[in-house]
Image (cartoon, rainbow, N blue to C red):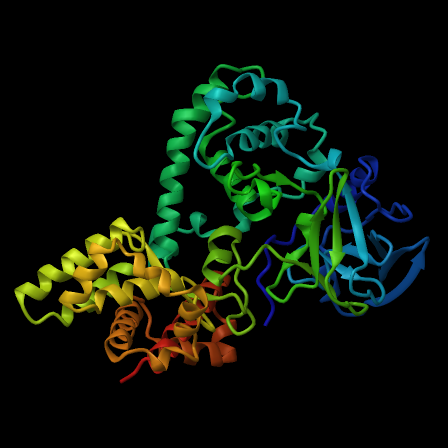
Amino acid sequence: MATDAKRLKTEGSDPLQSFLQWCEGVGLKLNNKVITTIRKCTKTLSAICKMPCISHTYRSIGGGTHQTIAMGSVLMVIQLYSFSKVYISNEGTVAEYGMLAKEDIDEGELLFTIPRMALLHQGTTKVLAVLEEGKASLENTSGWVPLLLALMYEYTSPQSHWRPYLSLWSDFTALDHPMFWSKDERDRLLKGTGIPEAVDTDLTNIQKEYKDIVLPFITLHPDLWDPERHTLDLYRSLVAFVMAYSFQEPLDEEDEDEKDPNPPMMVPIADMLNHVSNHNANLEYTPECLKMVSVRSIRKGEEVFNTYGQMANWQLLHMYGFAEPYQSNSNDTADIPMSNVYKAAVQVTRSEAEQRLLVEKWSLLCEMEMVGDKGVFIFGKSGSLTDTEMYTTLKILCMSVEEFEDFRENEGWEEADDDEEKMLQALSNEGLPSLPPLWRHLVHAAARFTLDSYGEDMLKDKVLLEDKDGYAKLSSRQRRALQVRYGQKTILHQLLELTKP
């Protein structure tokens, strides 16, 4: 089952051809340039291929591959631009565009390089000087505003240097992030996953950011931006674009604690590679350029996949608008709200004194920043991913009165006795069945509360996933939501089995 496409198929002129010609002009290392045109045809390649009486021939010219489709008097020639061992194509990939291996590739091979001058960010845009001048007024929590302003200008300017690149996205809503779904659809299909709440927060923040920062700024510069054209809707769409396609250069290890994260940037060509958790390529950063390098061998004809990081399916759908099949996403997770652990602890109190003690314990955990009102404990396919917070919370909640008083008097210093390896092992799939009974009960009850929060029954989701005909009839949104829901429920159900009495 393939990952859903991030871009919808487009008709008309060939924006990919224009973009790849632009890439050569800015120093992206394309192989031999072969220019082709599309003549006497208004249908897309995928539509033509479904017609009868079509003959296909393939030939290689100057390192590039042409596909010629003959149908009566209609001739279509599609150029698949190539690098040395890879090429960009809009056929045979999981999304509209992707990269395929033209021949076998060994681990560690350089696939392509991107010079720094080809990156689009606040330092390379035509409106750089204006953004620098207004830097103080553009500060915000996300750090995205300067890039978004640059994109608003470049995307709508006919003379933009970046127009061939940005023309690949004629309609940003085709990204189909949940922020473009109706609230009813989000709440109905994604209840329990955490996505509706995340999107509501996003939309609130986007609107506030536009009203308080962006609109006053663009109003001051009517020669560059127009509030009638550079609207909240466009701004929201560009936020989705940055969420789905931007890259953030990592800081050096010695700078991680001292510097703010680098702002996002758009990286042409690299952002055309699709994602799977079991990826076969990775982007490397050098002072002169960015390099895409294979991290394992890739066979001829295979798609080249980058990684967007260790992303759970709910994060992929929220940030990128697609989801992996739940079985193949090794990074999938399920969140247990911390409030559900507290709710489980309340249920085992038998007196007012125990209830008061529980309140004190929870208050201390809040002071220690182990729990919070909207916090979650995260479980992956192999166990807890927030083992320090989960272990400390269970330990304190299950303390006797005397143990809790000693712990509080010592200001939690005995916590140092619990090393990371011990906590990691205790909350792994192997260690969970051996937890003390009360610890297991709290995890079990909290997992049950979380499972009960979903809108759809787990068995119903399972049947739908296994029904090929029924699954095929679902909309793309329904399929993605189903993969997210069922993946989370599978992890929670596994947790129930590992902690049952």
